[in-house]
Image (cartoon, rainbow, N blue to C red; front, side, top):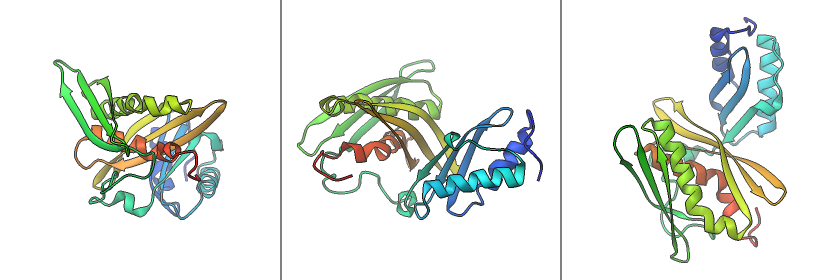
Length: 229
């Protein structure tokens, strides 16, 4: 196979295609100019992330003659049922303790190329929290703005636990005939930093999928302290 060369976009595309053949890998997005600077992998949950990262590194060396630093590889693991088109991320009934339900997500044009995203979350104790964010009109920008609005809606809960959340990467990823919103974020708790990832299929509005993807990434952190994680 051809080595990855400087400004060789064809080789990078070939590398991305080969990575999708790794066992358990569903989709891959490779970001880079001269060579990969970020590799985002969506995979099933039957293999550990470390195994998948090692396979990425091995394929890169053996097939393309390039060494990959494990730190540039992020793996989003999702159970099979997450990608069922009939599956709703918030589900029926009462949410797990401490986790919010998505009550509404509204995306309104404000004229020109601006949108306003409004998110309302419902909590087990019947409290509702809201968040708003401004967005451009592109679908990827709408998804990211929806995540920022979600973080604002989560502020009371995050503040009570001395936590904060920052979105690092958010993008749309083709999944066969479908499309998913993928997010990588960091949860800060005191001196601790925890990277988290989430992905959800776009079924209706991309803004709604953005909210659900972020919640998918951080919901484990929203459990009450007494619930083991």
